[in-house]
Image (cartoon, rainbow, N blue to C red; front, side):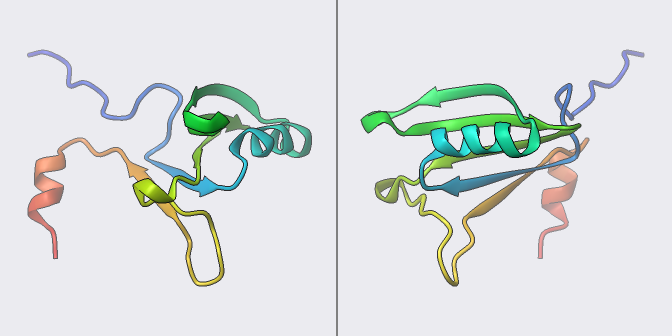
Length: 100
């Protein structure tokens, strides 16, 4: 029998946060200075913004993007916390079947 493939990408944990910020490129610089973050990747978007960025701090990953209001991505503001959690599970169909 073939060995089951690990649903968690190498280097990731079960949960990985993904946030929307103002000034993602500057945020990368801050994370490098403050927490010795290592930049894993960045994907440029229109107008000099970043569509996606990925850094590693210690053994943890953080993903984020610039705000793109036209796509529904708005930055953190009072009463609003634009965060997504990427959750890796062995059987997504079974998890989906358990929905509320």
